[in-house]
Amino acid sequence: MIKLVMCLTRRGDLSHEEFLDYWQNSHGPFFMKNRTIMRAKKYVQSHTITSPLNDGMKDSRGMLDEFDGVAEVWFDSEADLMEAMGSAEMQEFQETLLLDEKNFIDHSKSSAFIVKEVNF
Image 1: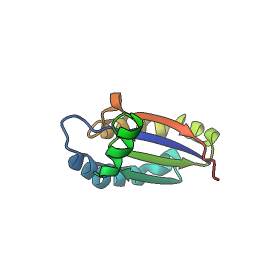
Image 2 (image 1 turned 60 degrees about the vertical axis):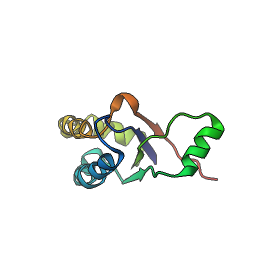
Image 3 (image 1 turned 90 degrees about the vertical axis):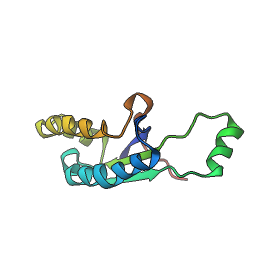
Image 4 (image 1 turned 30 degrees about the vertical axis):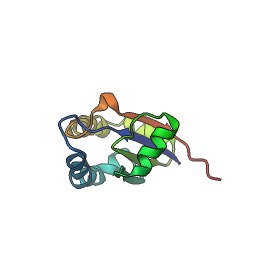
């Protein structure tokens, strides 16, 4: 299996709470309804919480500010994902997905990448 990881930063005009509300209650159900188009096997949202632990880790390591959240989407394989991405159905859906993401994500301050999990 492979995984798409998206580290998300909210649009500047949204509060953290508004971002999380839209992501969880609008985008999440929308994504799950359409997940078979991408052949997604699993979808998880990790919502960043307000905690002194976050500040402590950031300050002690000289790190950048945290993202507002992380989305993870699992797929059977890179080849399967690439095949799905090349389908006419996905090409059509991609535009709708991007429009929905623009409702709450600042893509210029976010990141996405494909990973392979290594368990210890």
